[in-house]
Length: 287
Length: 279
Image (tube, rainbow over all chains, first blue to last red; front, side, top):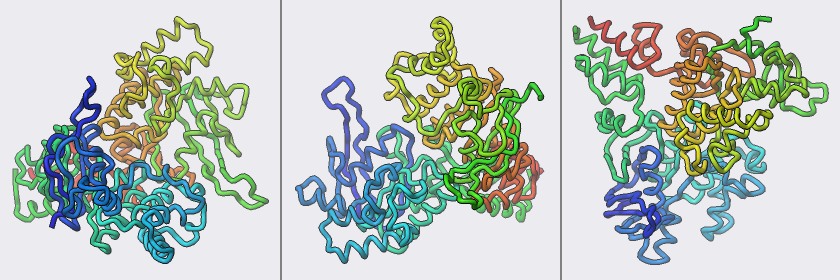
């Protein structure tokens, strides 16, 4: 069933002024429970505006947002529920750490939910385990951690609220390849073990292609496509046209295809590329 | 000394440890020697904590070596009286576009550096205009910096450096916080400054495709230089680079895995190699 739905969602900024802009234009979208959705779009496409509607940080100018089948703006109660069901982790979340210890920082969200001390403790420890935060780190000040560790603590803070939908805005930006892989792996494990729905906002499809089940492409305030990863890559030419990056491997196979080699164009990892070329070699293809 | 050398590291050591009580400290930079010459375009790669940012900060006297020497145009960076001279030769652009803009108008921000060097107002005017044109931000000269995109802000920061007319510009992960469009804008700008003005560029990054555009790639690991060569030479070492937490460009990897060519860096070069193999 659909866990997240928007119905003709429109959002305008600075309404009634000469600077009025439509950031989202009549967006209707259905996201199934348990998906791992990569949200792709360049700066100004409307992707940040969209995700801020999912837990009621922004109110639609027109249209509706449903979380778990419920219109989130129906009542104060439904809005509060949506805020706990949808956990949003902002870009560079390490700048939002503020508590004396890592433990207290991770516990902040669950405490606000009014849970018992035992339940809070259990959740902090679960979230710490998911994110590789050690017992020793829990007692430290967040400001004594490295950049990568801080990032994991900040993500743990959102995971500890055990939201049904976890949304992360650019969780890997500014990290080196190893740091990036660590974060993506922990997000994938989290989804597999909890069955939660996860959305990752990114500029770079190359990073998220490996772990996503669906790709949502936002462009010019509208949904350009919402499809599986291979189906999205089949439209690589269109993605490039609207200023999005596609993996280098995809570019190589687009060019091979254009130059007459009978290859698939929905290739996005080096492994798939090797397999595809070896297949042609076996078939004895000649140009 | 070779007059073409702008920046010279001579067996440089640096640690952030304050008190080591006789124990060997953790060296963030561990005995590095290297030379950057006029007109070089060097990319420095390495994972977080490999020492690459420390290396950058040592190059214009933000940090001073604990052992060894850093020479900028022959000036020892540890000579405190000449710190301003050092910085007029080697300019630095940092990672966060929001942390390095000081003025409320773009052109005033660009003028900040040359003003501090005590340059004549008429000359400052000329330099600011030239610098803004060089980074393609002249049309934005009277705008407020906070209204610009990340890529535009970084180009303004770069203009502020160019206006001081350094011989070398060091960029410390200056594209890490930008989107693909912003990254492309900054890369194109840097490439142009290098090609047109002959400025030496030291480009610290962990994007392999950006490093592939440089003439020379230095890979840092544990405070030391692991590889130093052309991108083609360095990216042959797929396994070794992976083992230190780095990638190689997908194009290079695919060509190597298919046993095609060791001279591939870009998607077009890789497609060429594959097409040839089917003929």
